[in-house]
Length: 446
Image (spheres, helix red, strand yellow):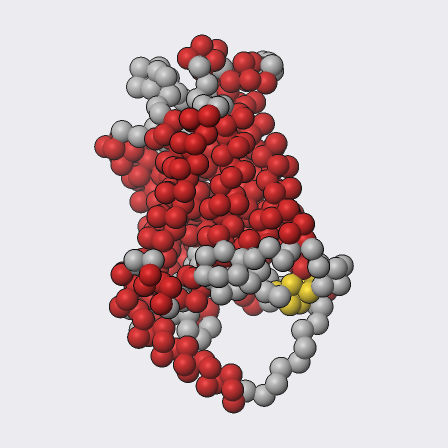
């Protein structure tokens, strides 16, 4: 806990007595407990995790690619699809080379070590240390799918005006300098936020706050789109966005229920909570839009679904179905406000609402986890305000603050370095002509 204080996260101090007492109690209980059997491969768990990895991969290709591709103008759709597809391949290689080792091996409170570079020491029959009923190769693959979609989510912020080369360099550096360390802090052995007791079942901090704030920083550093507020920036094909959003919804069951790491009751709870929260957010976003704009839109309903998925992600394995329903209702309404009102007030150009949905929704979900988590669902020590543990909310605030600071500051430095060298933004003529033809030599044909 001394490391937490050294980071300046004073918000977490109120929760320190609770964490210390819980840790001491756990140590005493462990000393008195009988010896547990050695871990053994479980084929059911392995089959579920193989399936989950495929589902999460589908979230990026083609899910997020189509979701984003439908929302940009027609002249830029292939550029967005290329960012997603090529990014999936590039980032997968980086994860295997170094990302996994940085995130999930012993090191210090902020970084893992380098003992598993290029998956060194992982044999076909090696069991995952953090999921000891499945092969480590399956765990590597599952976590790989998280890393690659998180980095590509960022590109929704500066969409329509960022160079392809700059985008790929940025997300490559980001996955190693930002994503892998935050994953280590939250989920890795000896991680800062994990040891502090911050709760994040499937990626509220690691995935959504992390990518959301990076997307906002990227949008600010790259600058606003040419013609914003004077030209139409309407989506060119909401049908594609709906198809992509539907693939995200289905794939998210691998994302959230897969994070239980076993084919058991935890996966079942995460799955039903994910679906209920998503459904609630569709209703609340659509109701808010209908009341304010006078018409319910398909784009709004799909955006509401993603908002609900984001909000429930950190909490899906810790809350009751009632808690999930309330979180989904809040998520749809708050994220609608963030993209319809907050963005206008602040004047930033977050083109595809990476910050408005993932950043704002991730923060809301992380905080509400500290409210609605109950030990009867998540287990001993995983309870929140309504279960008699107000200190958990303080810890969640600390986790949010740490993620915002780490991702925001490092993302800014990396973006500025790229801008000073090769430049971040396409030229004015390229932006007017469209990225598809100018950068990739291709166009969408009717």
